[in-house]
Length: 89
Image 1 (tube, helix red, strand yellow):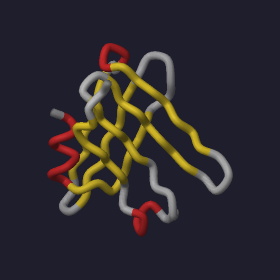
Image 2 (cartoon, rainbow, N blue to C red; image 1 turned 120 degrees about the horizontal axis):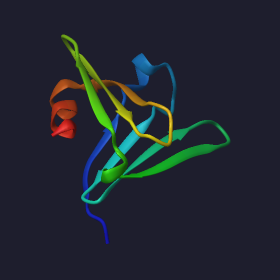
Image 3 (cartoon, rainbow, N blue to C red; image 1 turned 90 degrees about the horizontal axis):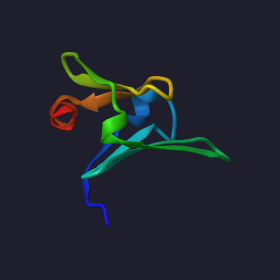
Image 4 (cartoon, one colour; image 1 turned 180 degrees about the vertical axis):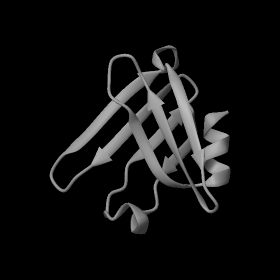
């Protein structure tokens, strides 16, 4: 059974949506979840499938981009700076 280490969710106000994208970091995998009104997009990624992680820190907020060989870029914007730095580690 996987243990949830960290949940990242973008700011609802700045993302401009009720359902901001979320990234669940477990000890053995990552789950990216993007919800719309009537559908949910969920991608499960193991750690060996991650090509690179890009952390972009601003004055108040940060954003994380994950690049995997099989899918497009996964981007979570308007995160707290401390949480984003912790997630990259």
